[in-house]
Image (cartoon, rainbow, N blue to C red; front, side):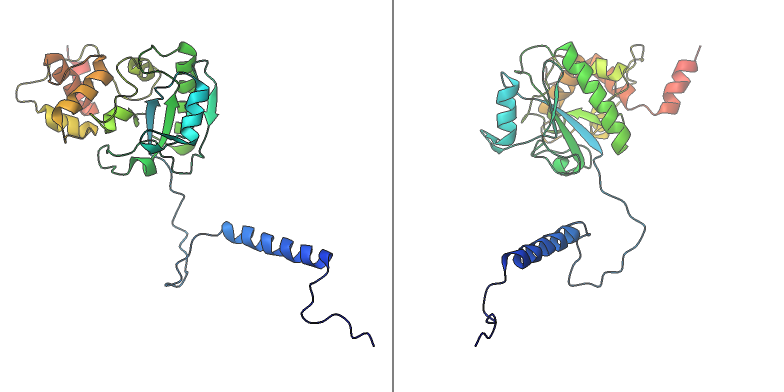
Length: 264
């Protein structure tokens, strides 16, 4: 007598496929839920929003081609696995390697102001450049377009754009003294001193000003060199009068700047 399928028999293929599909749908639905700690009762507050980047860090790749740069950013360099959110070629073509909401491995050790984990707080942009050549106009035009997009979409302050060496003096040198920071400032990104700013006053503390900007001061000579690369395109590990003038102007509160400009 036919007793029908055993309780241990395998379900027929259509039923099994349906079960697998249902399981996949349930898993995908759960993936969109916020993480919940099983040690606490979930009682959500509406007073929240997504965490997002608050800083943009600019690098050069120190490679000879986009192909080499893409390979490195998807594998590793001599120090281990690395990545960045974006890569821009010399021709201006942009590549996105990591989502803006994800933590790319581009900054490494260092800090900027009170930001100690720069990878978690920033978007990293690599420029395909060997580290010794001027940056192509098309590349910088493309960068400016991307900066505008990122600052608008993520509400990143337009002043919160730094170089890799700014946050890691002595350990990193990119984007280096050839990078056109003044051009970025003229387009409204980053910070730049006024050409007619007066000299720093007597008693001005340059180290307090450096810390105010965000520079790490673990090694002051390295910090000065990073500052000089950024604002003057020069080498040097000690301040001169022009450095002090620039530092004073960059850290002068806006009302004080307005008063200077309005003075006869």
